[in-house]
Amino acid sequence: MRDAQRILHQLERQGNLLSAFISHQDNRSEMLQFIMSPSADQYRELNHRFQQFCFECRFIHYMSKFIYYQSINYIRKVRKIQSRALSDRYNEKYMTEDEPSKKFIQTEFECPILDQAIMKLTVHQRKVIHLHYQKDWKLREIADSLNVSPQSISKTHRRALDHLKKWMEGEKYA
Image (cartoon, rainbow, N blue to C red; front, side, top):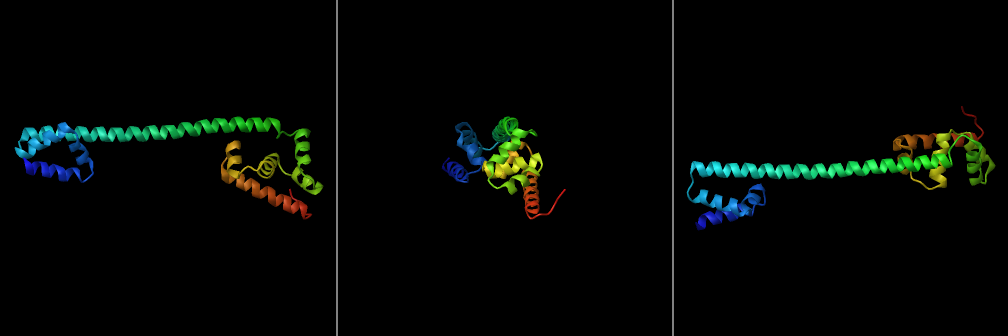
């Protein structure tokens, strides 16, 4: 009996699935009985319990991962919906093709050359420049609000700056 308990104690210290199995009192007593007097019936019963225990552990692990990733997807969906609402509100207020939006952007700059250069940009480029420099948004935030990739915003930003530089240096661009 003492040797059987010593064996079980060594197995428990390993810190793996078998030690977790042995930590349950019913499984521990079944294991002790098998160690002291092994038989085929006890082996089958112990094996069945261990397989059931392993299945429960895998199932719990699967469910915890499932819940974790579902919560991440839910948070992403909520953020996407919120960013669309923010983008729609922003677009309605500031970025349309009409004259008020042009006046809005023009009043933000004191340099008339810069005003003229910005008005030569596309509406999308003006949005990016306005949000990044006047509203201090990061390019990632702009991408999220406009529902495009950060790479696309970075490319638009870079092209807008290139166009502004060329125009202000006196070169014409299409």
